[in-house]
View (cartoon, rainbow, N blue to C red):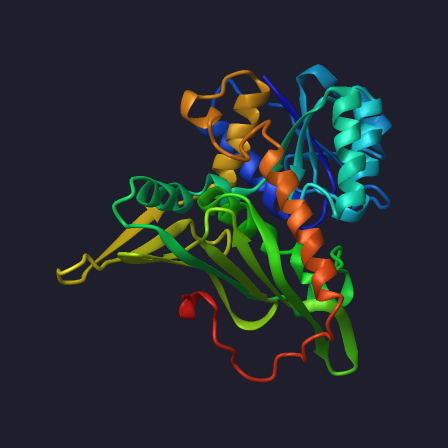
Length: 358
């Protein structure tokens, strides 16, 4: 059975990973050890530890509490410092790691991460809930059988208000690091490899406070298969939305991912438009606790218990290829966005790219 070391005790670590791990124990008996999760927060010590968490002073102190051969390390630190923390954990003997998305901040950091993985023979799984989502699986199945024709365009909108975190203590350098990695991974899975065709960003402003590049992010991709896709993320939106719209020769698929941990149901609207026939519309509700599925699969992989259908999942446990490409495309997006003047802050409602795909 496997213990857990949680590195980074902010929103991702204690707000998402910890409660999911504690719930998963009852769903997967014999996979998780019963002892408390050990946590470390580089640079600071939390005043109060949540239930189920024992906080160590640093990684060396955590190493004295854990057997590296029976421990999975969760790296929930900001992308900009992740490669250094990964090196420190590897030097202490930890080999199984679960890393928050994106895998690295840019190409330079990605090179260091890949060098550490190879040098220390690390087994790394990237936390990418959308790749493990029941909605993504359903979309892949619908597109895979060919009955809907070729994919022409995919649009993704990822909106949520994020003023406080962006303006006070953001660990991200641009909006491309917050929601967009989820979408890029799914687009690579559904449409194959791509190149960045266009990108832009905007600042977030509230009164006199400004957070550069953390307002919106827009990325257009041209895929080798001939399709095109676009991601638009607005971190100043008054509403939450995680929507994907797929236009094919004979259908339009509109999927809504759960917008928070408060609910775990995805929705899918299928509009079939057969040639010479009437349009039919069906609606599906999909139980979709994607983060739990992602972490449970990571632990099954670490324990050598991966199910056959999970081994072929692109970007799944132990497969870094799709995540490496995601980092490269996000790095290209930042470079493209930096070559044009930033967009003005949001003042009026914009058309959502997913709602106007095609």
